[in-house]
Image (cartoon, rainbow, N blue to C red; front, side):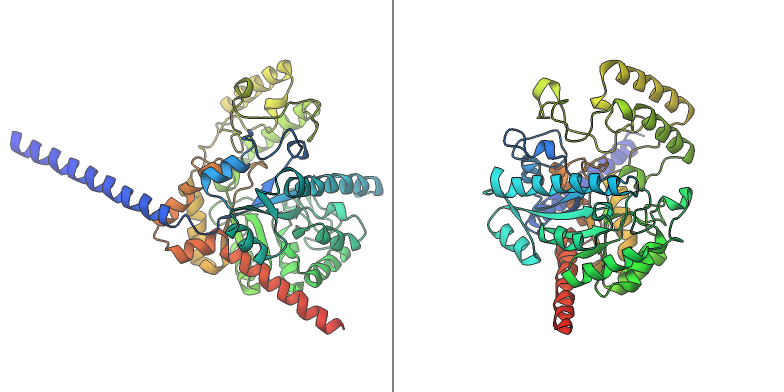
Length: 445
Protein backbone atom coordinates (compact mmCIF):
# COMPACT_ATOMS: atom_id res chain seq x y z
CA UNK A 1 0.00 0.00 0.00
CA UNK A 2 2.96 2.33 0.51
CA UNK A 3 3.98 2.46 -3.17
CA UNK A 4 0.60 3.77 -4.44
CA UNK A 5 0.59 6.38 -1.66
CA UNK A 6 4.11 7.51 -2.55
CA UNK A 7 3.14 7.60 -6.21
CA UNK A 8 0.09 9.78 -5.42
CA UNK A 9 2.19 12.18 -3.34
CA UNK A 10 4.76 12.39 -6.11
CA UNK A 11 2.04 13.17 -8.63
CA UNK A 12 0.60 15.94 -6.41
CA UNK A 13 4.05 17.46 -5.88
CA UNK A 14 4.71 17.30 -9.62
CA UNK A 15 1.44 19.13 -10.35
CA UNK A 16 2.24 21.79 -7.76
CA UNK A 17 5.70 22.28 -9.24
CA UNK A 18 4.22 22.57 -12.73
CA UNK A 19 1.67 25.11 -11.52
CA UNK A 20 4.39 27.20 -9.88
CA UNK A 21 6.42 27.06 -13.08
CA UNK A 22 3.39 28.17 -15.10
CA UNK A 23 2.72 31.03 -12.67
CA UNK A 24 6.34 32.13 -12.87
CA UNK A 25 6.17 32.11 -16.66
CA UNK A 26 2.94 34.13 -16.65
CA UNK A 27 4.36 36.66 -14.21
CA UNK A 28 7.48 37.04 -16.34
CA UNK A 29 5.34 37.51 -19.46
CA UNK A 30 3.17 40.12 -17.68
CA UNK A 31 6.31 42.03 -16.66
CA UNK A 32 7.48 42.05 -20.27
CA UNK A 33 4.20 43.73 -21.24
CA UNK A 34 4.60 46.39 -18.53
CA UNK A 35 5.87 48.95 -21.06
CA UNK A 36 2.43 49.46 -22.69
CA UNK A 37 0.73 52.76 -21.85
CA UNK A 38 -1.61 52.06 -18.95
CA UNK A 39 -4.50 54.46 -18.62
CA UNK A 40 -7.21 54.70 -15.96
CA UNK A 41 -10.15 56.73 -17.23
CA UNK A 42 -11.82 57.62 -13.94
CA UNK A 43 -10.11 58.84 -10.74
CA UNK A 44 -11.99 61.20 -8.43
CA UNK A 45 -10.13 64.00 -6.67
CA UNK A 46 -10.42 66.33 -3.69
CA UNK A 47 -8.91 69.82 -4.15
CA UNK A 48 -7.69 69.67 -0.53
CA UNK A 49 -5.06 67.19 -1.78
CA UNK A 50 -3.78 69.59 -4.45
CA UNK A 51 -1.94 72.17 -2.36
CA UNK A 52 1.73 73.03 -1.94
CA UNK A 53 1.91 71.10 1.35
CA UNK A 54 -0.52 68.26 0.63
CA UNK A 55 -0.47 66.78 -2.85
CA UNK A 56 -0.08 63.77 -5.11
CA UNK A 57 3.72 63.74 -4.98
CA UNK A 58 3.21 62.25 -1.48
CA UNK A 59 2.02 58.76 -0.64
CA UNK A 60 -1.40 59.81 0.55
CA UNK A 61 -4.12 57.43 1.69
CA UNK A 62 -5.79 58.15 -1.66
CA UNK A 63 -5.91 55.23 -4.06
CA UNK A 64 -4.19 57.33 -6.71
CA UNK A 65 -1.06 59.43 -6.25
CA UNK A 66 2.41 59.55 -7.79
CA UNK A 67 4.13 56.93 -5.56
CA UNK A 68 1.28 54.46 -6.15
CA UNK A 69 1.20 55.15 -9.90
CA UNK A 70 4.93 54.50 -10.08
CA UNK A 71 4.61 51.31 -8.04
CA UNK A 72 1.81 49.97 -10.26
CA UNK A 73 3.29 51.22 -13.52
CA UNK A 74 0.29 53.46 -14.25
CA UNK A 75 0.96 56.13 -16.87
CA UNK A 76 -2.26 58.10 -17.30
CA UNK A 77 -4.91 59.28 -14.86
CA UNK A 78 -8.17 60.86 -15.96
CA UNK A 79 -8.76 63.17 -13.00
CA UNK A 80 -12.42 63.97 -12.58
CA UNK A 81 -14.31 67.21 -12.18
CA UNK A 82 -17.30 65.74 -10.35
CA UNK A 83 -20.17 67.62 -8.75
CA UNK A 84 -22.97 65.82 -6.97
CA UNK A 85 -26.44 66.38 -8.43
CA UNK A 86 -28.35 69.14 -6.67
CA UNK A 87 -31.43 71.29 -7.27
CA UNK A 88 -32.17 72.41 -10.82
CA UNK A 89 -32.26 76.06 -9.82
CA UNK A 90 -30.08 79.12 -10.56
CA UNK A 91 -28.57 78.86 -7.06
CA UNK A 92 -27.91 75.14 -7.55
CA UNK A 93 -26.21 75.71 -10.90
CA UNK A 94 -24.10 78.54 -9.47
CA UNK A 95 -22.86 76.41 -6.57
CA UNK A 96 -22.14 73.45 -8.88
CA UNK A 97 -20.16 75.69 -11.24
CA UNK A 98 -18.00 76.97 -8.37
CA UNK A 99 -17.29 73.41 -7.22
CA UNK A 100 -16.33 72.40 -10.76
CA UNK A 101 -13.98 75.34 -11.21
CA UNK A 102 -12.26 74.50 -7.91
CA UNK A 103 -11.45 71.04 -9.29
CA UNK A 104 -10.27 72.34 -12.65
CA UNK A 105 -7.97 74.75 -10.84
CA UNK A 106 -6.67 72.00 -8.53
CA UNK A 107 -5.63 69.84 -11.49
CA UNK A 108 -3.91 72.76 -13.21
CA UNK A 109 -2.15 73.56 -9.95
CA UNK A 110 -0.69 70.03 -9.84
CA UNK A 111 0.51 70.00 -13.44
CA UNK A 112 1.66 73.64 -13.67
CA UNK A 113 2.87 74.63 -10.18
CA UNK A 114 3.21 71.73 -7.75
CA UNK A 115 4.88 69.05 -9.88
CA UNK A 116 5.25 70.04 -13.55
CA UNK A 117 8.38 67.87 -13.69
CA UNK A 118 6.35 64.79 -12.75
CA UNK A 119 2.84 65.40 -14.16
CA UNK A 120 1.72 66.93 -17.44
CA UNK A 121 -1.76 67.90 -18.64
CA UNK A 122 -2.66 66.04 -21.83
CA UNK A 123 -5.04 67.83 -24.19
CA UNK A 124 -4.65 65.42 -27.11
CA UNK A 125 -3.80 61.73 -27.58
CA UNK A 126 -0.42 62.85 -28.94
CA UNK A 127 0.22 64.65 -25.64
CA UNK A 128 -0.31 61.37 -23.78
CA UNK A 129 2.30 59.61 -25.92
CA UNK A 130 4.73 62.53 -25.64
CA UNK A 131 4.44 62.70 -21.85
CA UNK A 132 4.97 58.94 -21.64
CA UNK A 133 8.21 59.32 -23.62
CA UNK A 134 9.29 62.06 -21.19
CA UNK A 135 8.68 59.66 -18.25
CA UNK A 136 5.97 61.97 -16.89
CA UNK A 137 2.54 60.91 -15.68
CA UNK A 138 -0.17 62.19 -18.01
CA UNK A 139 -3.23 63.82 -16.49
CA UNK A 140 -6.43 64.14 -18.52
CA UNK A 141 -9.56 65.87 -17.27
CA UNK A 142 -13.02 64.32 -17.42
CA UNK A 143 -16.26 65.94 -16.27
CA UNK A 144 -18.66 63.68 -14.41
CA UNK A 145 -22.15 65.21 -14.51
CA UNK A 146 -23.07 68.10 -16.79
CA UNK A 147 -24.91 69.79 -13.92
CA UNK A 148 -22.29 72.61 -13.51
CA UNK A 149 -23.02 73.76 -17.08
CA UNK A 150 -26.34 75.07 -15.82
CA UNK A 151 -28.44 76.47 -18.64
CA UNK A 152 -25.48 77.98 -20.49
CA UNK A 153 -24.33 75.67 -23.29
CA UNK A 154 -21.35 77.99 -23.84
CA UNK A 155 -19.87 76.50 -20.67
CA UNK A 156 -19.16 73.29 -22.60
CA UNK A 157 -16.52 75.21 -24.54
CA UNK A 158 -15.30 76.88 -21.34
CA UNK A 159 -14.79 73.45 -19.77
CA UNK A 160 -13.10 72.22 -22.94
CA UNK A 161 -10.76 75.22 -22.88
CA UNK A 162 -9.97 74.39 -19.23
CA UNK A 163 -8.89 70.91 -20.37
CA UNK A 164 -12.00 68.70 -20.19
CA UNK A 165 -11.93 65.94 -22.76
CA UNK A 166 -15.06 64.01 -21.83
CA UNK A 167 -18.35 64.87 -20.18
CA UNK A 168 -21.21 62.75 -18.89
CA UNK A 169 -24.68 64.25 -19.13
CA UNK A 170 -25.86 63.19 -15.67
CA UNK A 171 -24.83 61.43 -12.49
CA UNK A 172 -27.12 59.89 -9.87
CA UNK A 173 -30.34 61.86 -10.26
CA UNK A 174 -31.55 63.62 -13.38
CA UNK A 175 -29.66 66.75 -14.40
CA UNK A 176 -30.95 69.54 -16.63
CA UNK A 177 -29.41 67.62 -19.54
CA UNK A 178 -30.45 63.99 -19.15
CA UNK A 179 -32.22 61.35 -17.15
CA UNK A 180 -30.09 59.24 -14.84
CA UNK A 181 -29.72 55.51 -14.31
CA UNK A 182 -31.45 56.14 -10.97
CA UNK A 183 -34.61 56.86 -12.94
CA UNK A 184 -35.30 53.13 -13.00
CA UNK A 185 -36.34 53.39 -9.36
CA UNK A 186 -36.91 57.14 -8.87
CA UNK A 187 -38.68 58.03 -12.13
CA UNK A 188 -37.64 60.07 -15.16
CA UNK A 189 -37.81 63.79 -16.00
CA UNK A 190 -37.33 63.46 -19.77
CA UNK A 191 -39.11 60.22 -20.61
CA UNK A 192 -35.88 58.20 -20.18
CA UNK A 193 -33.90 60.45 -22.50
CA UNK A 194 -32.18 63.78 -23.05
CA UNK A 195 -33.60 67.24 -22.51
CA UNK A 196 -33.60 69.81 -25.33
CA UNK A 197 -30.50 71.35 -23.77
CA UNK A 198 -28.90 67.94 -23.49
CA UNK A 199 -29.26 67.45 -27.24
CA UNK A 200 -27.55 70.82 -27.80
CA UNK A 201 -24.72 69.77 -25.52
CA UNK A 202 -24.10 66.58 -27.54
CA UNK A 203 -23.80 68.67 -30.71
CA UNK A 204 -21.45 71.10 -28.98
CA UNK A 205 -19.23 68.29 -27.70
CA UNK A 206 -19.01 66.90 -31.24
CA UNK A 207 -18.08 70.36 -32.53
CA UNK A 208 -15.27 70.68 -30.00
CA UNK A 209 -13.97 67.11 -30.12
CA UNK A 210 -15.01 66.35 -26.54
CA UNK A 211 -15.98 62.71 -25.94
CA UNK A 212 -19.60 62.01 -25.00
CA UNK A 213 -19.58 59.84 -21.85
CA UNK A 214 -22.41 57.36 -21.26
CA UNK A 215 -21.55 56.41 -17.67
CA UNK A 216 -24.41 57.27 -15.26
CA UNK A 217 -27.20 58.52 -17.57
CA UNK A 218 -30.31 56.39 -18.15
CA UNK A 219 -30.35 53.75 -20.86
CA UNK A 220 -32.75 55.76 -23.01
CA UNK A 221 -30.61 58.89 -22.65
CA UNK A 222 -27.54 56.90 -23.69
CA UNK A 223 -29.19 55.41 -26.76
CA UNK A 224 -30.42 58.87 -27.77
CA UNK A 225 -26.94 60.34 -27.29
CA UNK A 226 -25.44 57.59 -29.47
CA UNK A 227 -28.00 58.28 -32.22
CA UNK A 228 -27.32 62.02 -32.13
CA UNK A 229 -23.53 61.92 -31.80
CA UNK A 230 -21.57 62.30 -35.01
CA UNK A 231 -18.49 60.89 -33.23
CA UNK A 232 -17.76 57.67 -31.32
CA UNK A 233 -18.90 57.71 -27.69
CA UNK A 234 -17.38 56.26 -24.53
CA UNK A 235 -18.56 54.82 -21.24
CA UNK A 236 -15.76 56.09 -19.00
CA UNK A 237 -16.51 53.73 -16.08
CA UNK A 238 -19.33 51.24 -16.56
CA UNK A 239 -20.00 47.55 -16.12
CA UNK A 240 -21.82 44.69 -17.82
CA UNK A 241 -25.44 44.24 -16.85
CA UNK A 242 -25.63 40.67 -18.12
CA UNK A 243 -23.25 39.66 -15.30
CA UNK A 244 -24.33 42.15 -12.62
CA UNK A 245 -27.90 43.40 -12.86
CA UNK A 246 -27.67 46.97 -11.59
CA UNK A 247 -28.91 50.12 -13.39
CA UNK A 248 -25.38 51.58 -13.58
CA UNK A 249 -24.22 48.73 -15.81
CA UNK A 250 -24.83 48.61 -19.56
CA UNK A 251 -27.03 45.92 -21.09
CA UNK A 252 -26.29 44.23 -24.40
CA UNK A 253 -28.39 46.67 -26.41
CA UNK A 254 -26.29 49.60 -25.17
CA UNK A 255 -23.05 47.68 -25.70
CA UNK A 256 -23.95 46.89 -29.32
CA UNK A 257 -25.02 50.49 -29.97
CA UNK A 258 -21.74 51.72 -28.48
CA UNK A 259 -19.83 49.36 -30.76
CA UNK A 260 -21.77 50.59 -33.80
CA UNK A 261 -20.72 54.14 -32.94
CA UNK A 262 -17.09 53.00 -32.91
CA UNK A 263 -16.85 53.71 -29.18
CA UNK A 264 -15.40 52.00 -26.13
CA UNK A 265 -16.65 50.87 -22.71
CA UNK A 266 -14.14 51.21 -19.89
CA UNK A 267 -15.01 48.34 -17.54
CA UNK A 268 -15.35 49.64 -14.00
CA UNK A 269 -13.56 48.21 -10.94
CA UNK A 270 -16.33 48.94 -8.45
CA UNK A 271 -17.19 46.14 -6.07
CA UNK A 272 -20.95 46.79 -6.02
CA UNK A 273 -21.13 46.83 -9.84
CA UNK A 274 -19.30 43.49 -10.08
CA UNK A 275 -20.96 41.69 -7.17
CA UNK A 276 -24.15 43.61 -6.38
CA UNK A 277 -25.53 43.60 -2.87
CA UNK A 278 -29.17 42.71 -2.27
CA UNK A 279 -31.77 45.43 -2.82
CA UNK A 280 -32.72 45.21 0.86
CA UNK A 281 -29.13 45.74 1.97
CA UNK A 282 -28.63 48.55 -0.55
CA UNK A 283 -31.72 50.37 0.71
CA UNK A 284 -30.63 49.96 4.33
CA UNK A 285 -27.12 51.28 3.55
CA UNK A 286 -28.60 54.25 1.70
CA UNK A 287 -30.77 55.07 4.69
CA UNK A 288 -27.78 54.70 7.02
CA UNK A 289 -25.68 57.01 4.89
CA UNK A 290 -28.41 59.65 4.90
CA UNK A 291 -28.55 59.44 8.70
CA UNK A 292 -24.82 60.09 9.16
CA UNK A 293 -24.11 62.33 6.14
CA UNK A 294 -24.78 65.55 8.14
CA UNK A 295 -21.91 64.66 10.48
CA UNK A 296 -19.35 63.98 7.72
CA UNK A 297 -17.00 66.84 6.77
CA UNK A 298 -17.64 68.50 3.44
CA UNK A 299 -15.26 67.55 0.64
CA UNK A 300 -12.15 69.73 0.42
CA UNK A 301 -12.57 71.09 3.94
CA UNK A 302 -8.90 71.17 4.95
CA UNK A 303 -9.93 72.67 8.28
CA UNK A 304 -11.46 69.39 9.41
CA UNK A 305 -8.73 66.96 8.41
CA UNK A 306 -4.97 66.94 8.12
CA UNK A 307 -3.15 65.89 4.98
CA UNK A 308 -3.91 62.14 4.68
CA UNK A 309 -0.35 60.81 4.36
CA UNK A 310 -0.04 57.05 4.83
CA UNK A 311 1.77 56.04 7.99
CA UNK A 312 1.05 59.31 9.82
CA UNK A 313 -0.88 58.66 13.04
CA UNK A 314 -1.48 55.09 11.85
CA UNK A 315 -3.22 56.13 8.63
CA UNK A 316 -3.49 53.41 6.01
CA UNK A 317 -4.53 53.43 2.38
CA UNK A 318 -8.18 53.74 1.54
CA UNK A 319 -10.04 50.52 0.88
CA UNK A 320 -12.11 50.95 -2.23
CA UNK A 321 -15.84 50.84 -1.73
CA UNK A 322 -15.38 49.72 1.84
CA UNK A 323 -14.82 46.13 2.88
CA UNK A 324 -17.96 43.99 2.69
CA UNK A 325 -20.03 44.66 5.75
CA UNK A 326 -18.48 48.09 6.21
CA UNK A 327 -19.73 50.09 3.21
CA UNK A 328 -20.32 53.58 4.59
CA UNK A 329 -18.27 56.08 2.54
CA UNK A 330 -16.72 58.79 4.68
CA UNK A 331 -17.22 56.93 7.96
CA UNK A 332 -13.53 57.34 8.81
CA UNK A 333 -14.11 61.11 8.97
CA UNK A 334 -16.99 60.95 11.45
CA UNK A 335 -16.54 62.32 14.98
CA UNK A 336 -15.58 59.53 17.42
CA UNK A 337 -19.03 59.26 19.05
CA UNK A 338 -20.87 59.18 15.71
CA UNK A 339 -18.40 56.69 14.28
CA UNK A 340 -18.99 54.31 17.19
CA UNK A 341 -22.73 54.60 16.65
CA UNK A 342 -22.34 54.06 12.90
CA UNK A 343 -20.28 50.91 13.49
CA UNK A 344 -22.98 49.60 15.82
CA UNK A 345 -25.65 50.26 13.18
CA UNK A 346 -23.55 48.54 10.51
CA UNK A 347 -23.12 45.48 12.74
CA UNK A 348 -26.90 45.31 13.16
CA UNK A 349 -27.39 45.72 9.41
CA UNK A 350 -24.86 42.95 8.70
CA UNK A 351 -26.76 40.57 10.94
CA UNK A 352 -30.03 41.30 9.15
CA UNK A 353 -28.68 41.55 5.57
CA UNK A 354 -25.34 39.67 5.26
CA UNK A 355 -22.81 41.33 2.94
CA UNK A 356 -21.80 39.86 -0.41
CA UNK A 357 -18.16 38.68 -0.65
CA UNK A 358 -15.87 41.31 -2.13
CA UNK A 359 -15.23 41.18 -5.88
CA UNK A 360 -11.78 40.14 -7.10
CA UNK A 361 -9.59 40.87 -10.10
CA UNK A 362 -10.90 37.64 -11.62
CA UNK A 363 -14.49 38.94 -11.34
CA UNK A 364 -13.33 42.18 -12.97
CA UNK A 365 -11.70 40.41 -15.90
CA UNK A 366 -14.79 38.22 -16.27
CA UNK A 367 -16.62 41.43 -17.28
CA UNK A 368 -13.83 42.35 -19.67
CA UNK A 369 -14.07 38.87 -21.21
CA UNK A 370 -17.83 39.19 -21.63
CA UNK A 371 -17.58 42.61 -23.28
CA UNK A 372 -14.76 41.46 -25.57
CA UNK A 373 -16.80 38.46 -26.72
CA UNK A 374 -19.92 40.60 -27.21
CA UNK A 375 -18.49 43.65 -29.00
CA UNK A 376 -14.81 42.91 -29.72
CA UNK A 377 -11.50 43.75 -28.12
CA UNK A 378 -11.33 47.10 -29.99
CA UNK A 379 -14.26 48.45 -27.97
CA UNK A 380 -13.27 47.58 -24.39
CA UNK A 381 -11.02 49.34 -21.89
CA UNK A 382 -10.24 49.66 -18.18
CA UNK A 383 -11.29 52.07 -15.43
CA UNK A 384 -11.13 51.92 -11.64
CA UNK A 385 -13.28 54.73 -10.20
CA UNK A 386 -10.57 55.02 -7.54
CA UNK A 387 -11.24 57.56 -4.81
CA UNK A 388 -14.87 57.54 -5.87
CA UNK A 389 -15.95 54.10 -4.66
CA UNK A 390 -13.73 51.89 -6.81
CA UNK A 391 -11.46 49.15 -5.59
CA UNK A 392 -11.64 45.36 -5.47
CA UNK A 393 -9.60 42.56 -3.94
CA UNK A 394 -6.27 42.60 -5.75
CA UNK A 395 -6.76 46.02 -7.36
CA UNK A 396 -7.38 48.42 -4.52
CA UNK A 397 -5.12 51.24 -5.67
CA UNK A 398 -2.97 52.29 -8.61
CA UNK A 399 -0.12 50.41 -6.91
CA UNK A 400 -1.79 47.06 -7.72
CA UNK A 401 -2.40 47.61 -11.44
CA UNK A 402 0.02 44.82 -12.35
CA UNK A 403 -2.49 42.29 -11.02
CA UNK A 404 -4.92 43.28 -13.78
CA UNK A 405 -2.26 42.81 -16.45
CA UNK A 406 -1.32 39.45 -14.95
CA UNK A 407 -4.91 38.22 -15.03
CA UNK A 408 -5.29 39.34 -18.64
CA UNK A 409 -2.15 37.37 -19.52
CA UNK A 410 -3.53 34.39 -17.61
CA UNK A 411 -6.71 34.57 -19.74
CA UNK A 412 -4.68 34.44 -22.93
CA UNK A 413 -4.69 38.06 -24.07
CA UNK A 414 -1.59 38.97 -26.05
CA UNK A 415 0.49 42.14 -25.79
CA UNK A 416 -1.31 43.94 -28.63
CA UNK A 417 -4.71 43.21 -27.09
CA UNK A 418 -3.59 44.24 -23.60
CA UNK A 419 -2.22 47.51 -25.01
CA UNK A 420 -5.65 48.19 -26.52
CA UNK A 421 -7.47 47.40 -23.28
CA UNK A 422 -5.16 49.48 -21.08
CA UNK A 423 -5.57 52.63 -23.17
CA UNK A 424 -5.07 52.12 -26.88
CA UNK A 425 -8.77 51.90 -27.62
CA UNK A 426 -9.59 55.04 -25.66
CA UNK A 427 -6.79 56.97 -27.39
CA UNK A 428 -8.16 55.83 -30.76
CA UNK A 429 -11.68 57.02 -29.95
CA UNK A 430 -10.36 60.32 -28.61
CA UNK A 431 -8.42 60.83 -31.84
CA UNK A 432 -11.46 59.99 -33.96
CA UNK A 433 -13.55 62.53 -32.03
CA UNK A 434 -10.91 65.16 -32.83
CA UNK A 435 -11.13 64.27 -36.54
CA UNK A 436 -14.92 64.65 -36.49
CA UNK A 437 -14.54 68.07 -34.87
CA UNK A 438 -12.15 69.17 -37.62
CA UNK A 439 -14.56 67.99 -40.32
CA UNK A 440 -17.45 69.84 -38.69
CA UNK A 441 -15.33 72.97 -38.51
CA UNK A 442 -14.56 72.79 -42.24
CA UNK A 443 -18.25 72.39 -43.09
CA UNK A 444 -19.14 75.40 -40.95
CA UNK A 445 -16.77 77.71 -42.87
